[in-house]
Each structure stands twice: as structure tokens, then as C-alpha cells.
Length: 195
Ligand code: SF4
Image 1: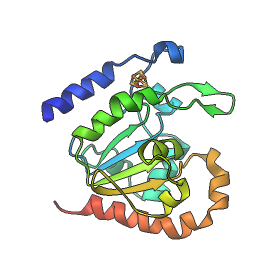
Image 2: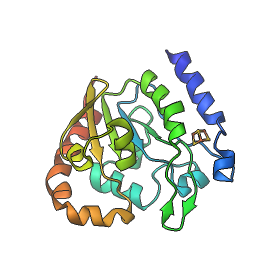
Image 3: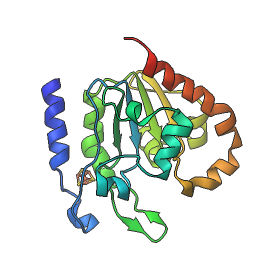
Image 4: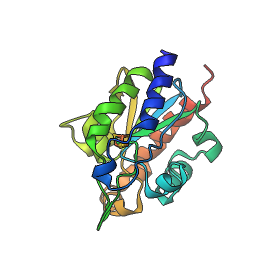
């Protein structure tokens, strides 16, 4: 199992399948331990992550880590706590209105294999595209406001914390006032649980 995991990490890091699609050199950015407590799955690394190799080090990341989860960088980037991945493991480039959608080929090739070898106690799925891939045909808002089960473990679905998502937050004020405290408690329980 560990060998499978190490080999998988090596293969993903070496992947350049999307070079011609992106028009620039792909840079897979993801990581964590095989037995990380939480497996966090979002849409794709940001331009900042592409340039620096550090995930969630932008405005959306600040909101996610400090306001929503209320944890420190030390806790978030501890590979025993979080394995951080996405539908696409590389930044896919920009459109006029934002980042390009992640190439789903990446999720089909690599994310499904990560799901086979990782053993989290909790899944966190961020954003509509990731939710659609893992929970096809289910209503995104219902997914967010109710606990889900993925591969037999508890799964929390979150909207994307990006500042560009402001309309969703305006339309769903109960998310931050009512749902988020419950989500935060589940995350803290998993992080602080002695196992
Ligand atoms: S996005 Fe995924 S499939 Fe495309 S180059 Fe990066 S790792 Fe490979």
C-alpha cells in the first residue's frame, strides 16, 4: 500500500499530460501523508500555487484556513492533518473572467487513484465542480447544508471561498451563521482527536 502511494505521488508529480492544452509547463501541486486525517479536494491549484508551490496561500485560502476552519498554517500544512488535492493537480490557466475549469481528465486519471490509496477520517470537498464529480446529479446547496458520506467516511461539502463567489454567500446567509459552526466543530474534532 505504502509503495503504491509513493509510486502514485511520483507519477502525478511527473505528469505533463496537459502541456499542450495549457500552453505552458504543467506544475502538479498537491500533497500530504497517506494517512492524513482529512482529505481535502477542491478544483485546481491557483496561479499563486503554480508560481510558489504553496497551496491555499491566497485570499481564498486565508478565508478557508483562518475564518472558516479557524486553524493555523502550521495545522493546515501539517501533512499528518491534511492531504490537499483537487480535480486537477495543476493550475489550468486563465480565461477573461477567472481561472479555466480544471481538466476532468486529471480527476479521472489521478484523483480516483488517490481515493483508492488514501485513508482519511474525513473528506472535505470544495466547490461546485468537485462536488459534481464526486456527487453527480445532486443539488450543490443540499450537499453543503447536510453531512455526506464518501467511501464510508463523513464528507463535508463547502462552497468555494474565493472572493469571486460573493453572490453565493449573499444568497445563502445561513451558511456562515448556521452551517459553518457545525462544519468547524467536525473538523476540530477530527484534528484534535487522539487516535
Ligand atoms: S492537470 Fe493533471 S493530468 Fe494535467 S498535467 Fe497536471 S497532473 Fe497531469
